[in-house]
Image: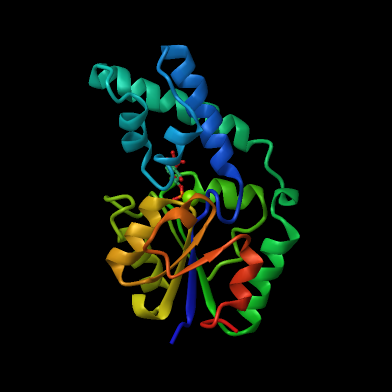
Length: 211
Ligand code: B16
Ligand code: MG
């Protein structure tokens, strides 16, 4: 029986996935490395350094350069986060989180991002979840299930009792590897392993496990 929902952050609760894209694109353009939205989809849910490796595929840079590039991208990304306000959380997202709580479900965040708490603070959602697990809690990012396992432990539920909502192929893989029920939104709807596919977060409330 499903008793908890673990949400990915970028691309599920907020559209910060687009900020990631723009920050990577600026870096890639500066370096003369081709980068487009299709390639960007491979970065969803993947850690910052692993993302950089994908951006630089086929190009050779020193480890020192790569460290600087990752910092450059993160600075550009954090600059764009400064513009985030509570208005960036849609009514649908707020209402869905509230409705899930009212129905007695535990809700948590499971994000690879080390900027998770900064983002949640900016949009006024830091205290909206029963637990937060993020990039600062883990050593292996998605598709490893570690972040979801930390989140489920923090809401005292077994993975089999939790839905994971993801926009990333790596996130759906992680959910499956950890024994969670994977629900896909956005790009992840193309993943064959998803148990359910939704077009927007409110549709969660119509799933048979939630109704
Ligand atoms: P940061 P999620 C992930 O967040 C993003 O999808 C991915 O694009 C990003 O590289 C990763 O966080 C690390 O983010 O550089 O902020 O630590 O989708 O798991 O919420
Ligand atoms: Mg995501």
